[in-house]
Image (cartoon, rainbow, N blue to C red; front, side, top):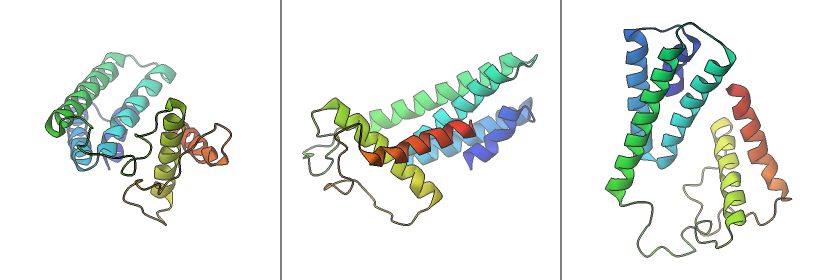
Length: 167
């Protein structure tokens, strides 16, 4: 919904007060989404990516308004994320064991990066086709990705390429 509200700003169809109102409403939606689940804050990146790519691909006499919106968007995103981290005392959960979050408990950084990429791909798949909804990835609900040659990594590759096409 936030992307639909903010879309006319990126396209240049909303200006002045209309753009500011759309920016404020989209930011409020993203803050609400981020307070419900931390992945909601990821959409700040989507809106920022739209602004950056549109600014690089299309020159317009009023580019300063685009960069001003981007600055406001990033300031709001950083402030909202900072407030959430402050309120929840960070991301550490007391007495968390490797069974609660096997990815975070993994010592090998490459395994963590590859496994989180797989989680991104699964989230993208669920956005498009919500067949099996799992509330968490604890207790090895999503097995760790140990090698870059794991075929399951085709899912996040497709998700990242599809996301890039949307930008």
